[in-house]
Length: 341
Image (cartoon, rainbow, N blue to C red):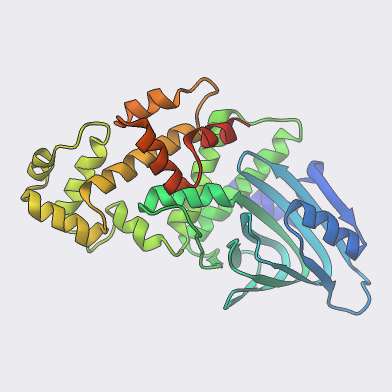
């Protein structure tokens, strides 16, 4: 177990986490629902008992670019009904107490060191927390969906995860370690501290990788196929895709691509359609769009969209902009502005 996880466990039983980032501290149910609802989303909050004896609420939040790490604790047994979260994904890792969660048709019991939850914005959720405190990672919905689009070759759209995170499995352990490290980092920085742009980008990449490659979701198979990881993918197509990715900034040369993969052009074209569900040129466009999105998402204020686009092999800026909007749901300039704001 990592030092960060051990330190988080030690602190969890003694006091709340992120104490310098306090946003809500109250024993009033209505106030808790209103104030925490402003930070997350509007929701119904009801103590299990007719009277709210023993109720308390605490929410501490350290916000970053595209994500936040939170400590949320409720005293007593509390029913929470947010419906659909709409704007974000939530990873909830119990520190103390337990929580019974229903996400869509799936029910789970979350408990420290055993089971955590991942709530998707389009799946209705209801929860019952029992003297529970959780470390909660909030991830911007658009950021997750755009990265899933880049990885899967699909247009940006809803991504729905398996809500059950097994904290005893390798992927669950890795996610838990990262959240423990992020919480410790926030506490050490304090409210006035700032992460560098490079460190912020590294954290976004790590958290997106945990979710999209470590937790099962509706695009998992598409990502595995598009990235060439699927076992059923023939070796020659894997070689062709790797060659295409390595030369994505160059003009498409089908003869060279066929030579690199060891099969004829027609067989290669049919293979891409059958196994990737795309033509070779469509996959190349997706690769270039994904690279453009990644560059813009980490762009500096003086970044030139035109220069980046030409560097990645785009020759017609109008068609590029239209394809980008169709895939990511916004213009290239909107992506650049959002990352700089």
